[in-house]
Image (spheres, rainbow, N blue to C red):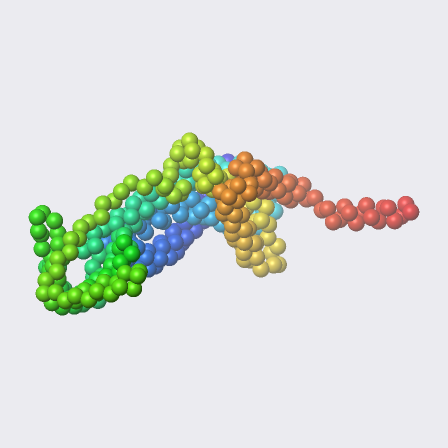
Length: 368
């Protein structure tokens, strides 16, 4: 009981501290990226915090996995440096005895990671996509900003407004470029205002010029005192081809296309990787007190990066048909699990393969 309680308390402290640091770093990086998207017009500036929150929520599975991995490696490495491991080994506790208390501590976190990967990840991506689509399909008049060139939702118009009034109903020095039906039109006016004619919004331009050019090279120039153009909001329509990351896990299983299987393999891989990292953490925690203290931690982080890059690579292979769904899960996660168990058994039993090979070589030479 003392062995289990002591280990769990230190793991909890290390996990909590690591989680606070990593979440702070991820939130800062996400905020910077979201602000960059807002400056480019991809995200509503008033919804920056919502987009950032949904994004961080989607990143929680790998964050929790990394926190658990670092907590185990850091705790066991400290026990090696302070010679606590020697005490536990002398008391009859082998290295494999750490599996039970570690999984007792980690199982709630593993369940949370699984739930986040299978349920929360697609939901947060869907919410973020809806916010971006709603802002991207807003009306043309809502896109107009003084001193900036803005493109319409359809991509067929470009607006420029020099100055506007406090009520946003009129402006000066207006420029509109339109490309529709093989005809390019450039309209400029000294002033313009928004009027409602017949229940529909119209942009009424005053004292301007209109230049029309066709693909045949015909050019038509006209001047006007007043010119009215109908404008309106673009309705947000439902999309049939939703990205795979925004679809629920049930939809992925129900429609097992290559893209859906690749996404499903990635989500299941997050949960399986978290389990494997518990085993790997025990094997990489062994520290030589005379060596650098951060050496094993650097190796652990390198192993984490490589594992997740292989997970992303496998998702791409399954999506393109280069690897099967079951084959990928068995080879990557099953192979890592077997390798981790074999490495743990080697350290637990103190197997020395090089020493055994030298003895066999020496015995062969003596017999010869």
